[in-house]
Length: 512
RNA sequence: GGCCCGUUCGUCUAGGGGUCAGGACGCCAGGUUUUCAUCCUGGAAACAGGGGUUCGAUUCUCCUACGGGCUACCA
Image (cartoon, rainbow, N blue to C red; front, side):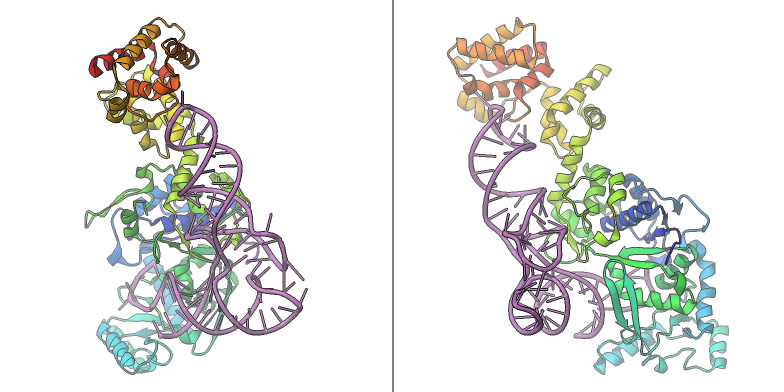
């Protein structure tokens, strides 16, 4: 494996929106590449034309871009091994499949779907543990091992459908090293003669993946654990092709599991449990089905990257917040865990909260401003600064920017109604008299800083024999209409004298 | 069913032959904020079970159980 420059690929198939587990696979590939001064490439594995979904490829590229995973070579950017879309590489795969046939490692098979089905039924009836097309059954099937050369030629000339199957050796132990799992041993008796080349002229994943990894000089195959069972086949392919000396290292990543119950994280879990399973929103072009994404739910991309990185990997320290740069510096495959990780929606929220706090008030205001405008607030240059100050006051209370409006609408509109519970309990003639005085005092206060307003308010209360604490909640409701919010005097300072006096007048008029 | 991979607090995980088995999320309690959130302090909470190896296993090994993946002319 040695000193070849590190090259890794993310190789999704465009069959729908990229799953968040796929994003993590891409991320680990990217981190590994960057950590080792290598190259990260994107290859699109669209060898199954039946499953092609329009828009899926664009979705994948946009999702990676949003996460800050830079495609350095491959689909959308090009490179020395173009094309990177397997459908566009179609013509080159057949020769490799045929080479394997010539070498005696593969063969033509003419069995129809019905014949294959009949074979499986027969084996099941005979109580065979694993009915499959393999060393023991291929002798009973219609293929170039059982048919004469003439018959094969005749069939092919007549345009009969055929596939090329791998001729798995009968009795061999396949050993390969996995960076994450150590040595994995599989006996060829449990492998079947996988189709390498389909009757539609396209390679299967197995062939295309090995050929392309070889041609693109991939040094490390980092992919999900679901590929572990077929890794021995891939090893066999490298051997049969004579490419074993440049066979990539394998690293099979643990899967992302659903938060409740069992099984791998799937599309439905998200909407059922209220968290996204996809990076971006997606609408299925065929069914119209909607799936929500992290981006539209209000997650920051750096938060998503951080939380994804920690699902299956950890730095071995207590540091939990990592920028992409820091992840690159700290990442290594031998700190990737072996077991699946259940996705934890609560922790995901926590991560976003941490990143929300890291944002400057200006950055937050930039995101909040469109929402403020949408709510009908007139925005001038002056209020951009105002929005920024609002963000400063409320950001400690939120996990997401999209919670800002509910926390701050009173900064933009005077309350139309007042918390009924508090009013019913605390509003009376004495209270009205007191707040009338407060209004007058405020009207004559020039220093409207939070500190001074607080002092003035307390002094007024004391002069009227009122414990300031006993009217604070009522005061908050009178000014904001609600019972929760930032430190009240900070809010009052920002609201400004004129607005506060106006609100007192309004409350006095309405609550009378 | 068969094959492969796995198993430390509810969750993500650190650790590794002798540790008070550590951290984080969440949860609970107290304090601060005259509310809420934040913040601070504290707390409950784990080595799946059984054999071996060993002076000593959570750590090494085997078996069982459980979980997961794969088992298509899908990737």
